[in-house]
Length: 296
Length: 97
Image (cartoon, rainbow over the protein chains, first blue to last red):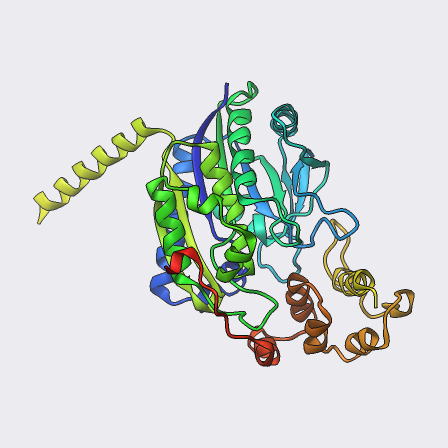
C-alpha cells in the first residue's frame, strides 16, 4: 500500500517564476526557503509520485463543459502552457496507474470526477511542481478543480473529496511513497479593480485555522463571503482538500509573506505525515544546535 | 447580447497566441472576429482592446486578466483602467470580526 510521505500546499502566483526578483529579498528568501526545505524532504523521503491539486484557469476547459473536478489520467501531460512563464516546456510524466485508481476509488466513494487523458498544465501546477523537482521527472497526477466559474464546488465538498483522495492514495498498491500537494491561493484579486490587493487578515486567519485543526469555520464559508478575500481566494479549495486527505494531522505554516509585487498572499504549509521522521529531524536539529553552541 | 459569444471570442483570441501542446505559433494575427455573434458594443470593445468596456460588459475576471496580459497591458495599467469601477465594500468576512 502507498503511504502519503509528504503533504504540503503552496501558493502558485505565476510571478514567483516570471518576476521572481520583484519580491523583496527577505520575503523571497522566506518563501523559496520553505520550498527548498520541501524539495529536500521529497528527496529524503523518496517520493515516487505526486498528486497535485490546483484549479482551472480556462486552460483546459471552457464554458461548454466545465468540470468541478478533473483527474489527469494520462501517461504524460504538457506544460507550462503560458508562453511567458520561464519554466521549460516539457511533457511531464503522469502516473496512469495511480490516477486511474484515484478516479475509480473516488467514484466508488460518491464523487463524480471528470477525467482527461491529456491535460495542459498552466502556472497553477507548474510553478509548484517545478519547485518540487527542477528536473520535472517525478510522475505527477494532476487534479484541477473549479475555483473560478460559478457555480463552484462548495469548500466543504472539496474537503470531503480530499478525504476520499487520501484514502484512495493510501489504498493504492502500485507505489509506496506518494506526495500530495495543493497549489493556489491565498488571497488575491485578478481582473477587477482590486487587483494588487492582499487580505493579510484573511490569510493569517486561514493559516491559523489549518494549524489549529479548526476547519469548520472555513468549510462552511459561502462563496460570497470568501470573495471578500479576493476572487483568487477560492483557490483555498486545494488547501482544504489536502487537509482532508491527511486529517486529523494539523498543518504547520512554513512561510507566509504578503508579496505585493506578486499580488498574492504567498504561503507554504506542510502536514507532517511521518511523525517519527519529524522527531528524528528535531533530534538532529537539536544536536546540530548543540554542536554549533559548543563551537562558539 | 450573447454572454457566451463574447467569452468565446476573447478566449479563442487569447488561446490563438498561446503555446498549444507541441505546436507553437501566434494565430492572433489573422483572427476572424466576424465568426462570433457579438453586439456592437462587444465588437467595439474587442476592436479597441477596451478592457474597461469588457469589464462593464461582464467578461469573466479570469479572462480579463488573461486578455490583459495577452494584449500587452501591464498589471498596473489595467488596474488604473479598472479603478474607477471599484465600489466600497461594506460587508465583513468572519475573519474580520
